[in-house]
Length: 305
Image 1: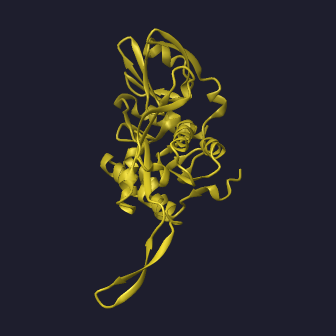
Image 2: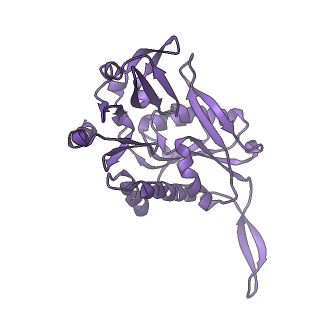
Image 3: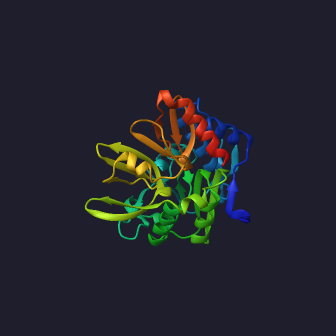
């Protein structure tokens, strides 16, 4: 597939080394957060390579000097909640004076499409160069909705989307949705299992309504008494009127029960460490100690499918 210059993969040795640390099951939580910040810094550095410059005359301690400074439109970083927040500190290390907006996406209960449930954007967002931050670009649904929302808010010119890990499906969807957009990523993984995704739609009941959902959008499931809480990749969750065990019986092999109360979707697992699965959005789900060996082996086998 050809994406030309609209997709930039940071293949620098340091970036790839840091990405390996991020995926490593032995990486402590505090180091995991630090690496996310560092990778975000590297991506921001690369994504701002084309900032315009102007000549300025300054006085050094020794003599006058003709220097260069950034000019043009001011910068805004817009993390997609909640996972995008982890990338903000790294981005601000590159441009400390940039404004930060926040955009939360969730599924519309009627259309089942992503929509904004929260936004706090700079008042002058339409006049700024916008960099969208989200560590994971999987299906591209939330990313597409976020970019569309920013366009409707008046953002013009090239939008730059920064993610740490991406899938081809998400890249293609996002590029098709906006002609003036560039994606920066540290890695393009093999992608989602399309043949399994087609079999993942089920009907659940919650809040006295019946709804068709796509389990491919679910990152993990939590048992809650006689109900189940489904957590989606757009940050939203719903409580379904179905027992945990009954719901798991409807799921594909992508889902694995990792403890008495939790099951994860392997499509959203970055790796594992110290009896925990690390999800692409940075969340950690505990793995039962008694089943740790079996579950980690199942994850390795899943990667080989």
